[in-house]
Length: 541
Image 1: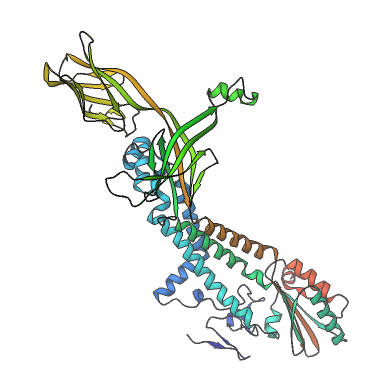
Image 2: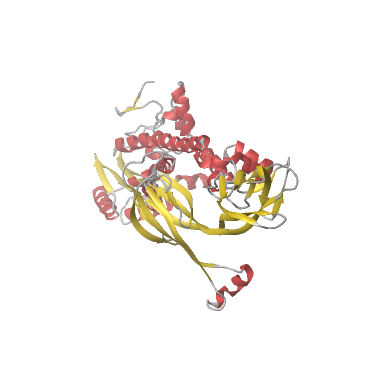
């Protein structure tokens, strides 16, 4: 497309409505309007000029404010739907996610999972929505800020008569003592911090141009904010996982690549007592029976020495001891471990005895580690017990078969094979809490429950966030743009001499009443008349 050359000699890009230099109207249909459109200084925007190639169509699509608003609305609706049911990271690891959602929430849960809402914020289509908002912000900004900057930079002091006449504030005066009035006007404009440019006896007074860039500074802040949000899905940039740790247990800390380990030395729970604590807690204590005053994990942080060798226990070096409380995390490198939850008296070990059903004579005890049971327990003298099946969280399915809901020993059950000298082929017994089944008829021997060992379990959130400073920077830049566009205005006053008359025109991007008062104060005491608001004249007419 060819550029358009104005009578003043300035070459404007194709699609320009007002000459960037003198303001002369270049489009014929614009000459019929009472006032000129100063939204983008009448400059040519790419989205309104070209629409032929696929690049043009993509550019025009994303440059639309309506498209950007709809993308934000769709993203907000999707984010809201993602809060209806818990995300996959927050559901208990009792069964596969697809089964859990259907089991807990029925067909709604199944649909929720199939549509990908169970892992919404890292799903591919949600990331595409976020990226599309970012693309829309970039293209919207470039489509507007570049021509606006070019037009403001190229503007001349002496503007075309048609440009001045079609400004909202415009007036013509016949002045007798012109030089004196001009000097007084310039003096008052400088006092009001206007930047004054003169050319052939004409004046352009301007201030607050930087406020025009406020919306685009907002866009930059939002783009940086979105980049920070998307970086959370880059491995190693953001970690938010839960580590369950039993007393005495040592585990590798997630996302540390096996370098750091944590041992739960002791879990402490303190509760409010009705007689000792303030009366303000009495109502809560009567209602719930127990209110936690403090719960903490006394832990030891270890660091692996040397390289990890598969199949071998790592050699650990103690880093430090720490007491993790709510809002008092253990911090190391870029990680922080927060106290978030606990579980008291979780089953840890169960002790049984092999006994004769008739005489109750016992032939030895076996202690089963519920997290690592052995396949066989030798009791000596020809007596032994084999663990044929183990169901940590036992229940019967619809067909009556025993299954486990999770790997956590909330309701342990066993299928034991009891081998004795008089029954070398063994007897089968199904043993659960308060339940014993002998599937092949009456047995001569039984597994008798002797005792149980429990442990307290603590839940720690492992958190790492290398994107926080990026998100904070984006938020700061956004707020700077808000202040820049909200508390300052771009104001311009043109004063031109034409055939012994003085033409005065004014424009602002907002707060016209403030500009009127300022022009009135500047022209006060001179023979130059205050310009009229042509929109008010139209209403009167």
